Image 1: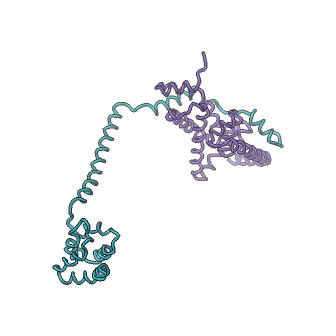
Image 2: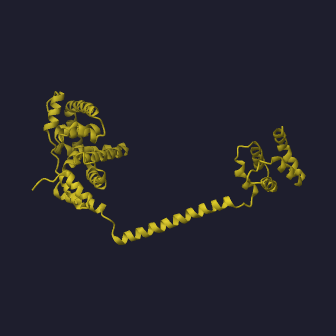
Image 3: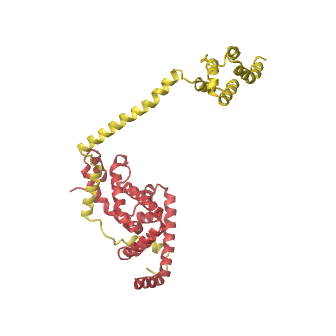
Length: 190
Length: 163
């Protein structure tokens, strides 16, 4: 069976075969899901963000420009949705965030690889840049299209993101013993 | 991870390490597709009829409300009102020194008393200030007390205009 291109599926959906959207969900939902999942502090909202991403993609499919990759367009929507959710999260009270984050941390310990667990602590822009560049292995040009930025700016921000990630990792290593002691103490007190 | 990190080792880790999180299962994909289809599917016929009916009534009601507000506005512009002072006010909006003086008088004086004066003063609607002196003369037939007050305000202006 020959591989059907994204644009071919998109055209069929545009011509009224809306159920074929399931093919695009099958193709891309796992990639978008992992992209969202790695950013651990939005994990409680992943289903909503994923749903909104695909819903918006479906509703605005007529706006999709075929000169771009469908995956690039989809990541653009997912990135914006993630930004929106993070912004909403920031608007919540500081107390609520403090209550949520330790629960998420305990999940990430088991599920995330070390580097991406640390990368999840970066801001959304830096995290997305690293994910698209090194996990999705997209070209800088494609990343620039997703982030609505320029190629030089993407390169500069990639460097900044790595630099910040390095600081995070170093800080984690320095504090790891103290943190372990704190966790042990807090668990024993519970 | 090692204790010391340079940029290359971070890039290598980012490239090689993969997220060990759960996959998005086929069941979840099915569920997502179902949700999307439900959200974008057209409404059932009955409910869409009701919605159309409601929005149609809402539209008609909105038009009626707008007409109720707009039609009297246009009618009001083509008909004389009962209150000549109120009728005179739009005309007084002209950048005219006489009009400004008269407007101040209208605002100061009792509208009931002034009403009769105003109705005569603005009898020439097309250009109420064109024959200012003639209108002043017309006021002679009115009561003396109003006339004297009027002259006290308007005589200096009238004489200036004559000069």
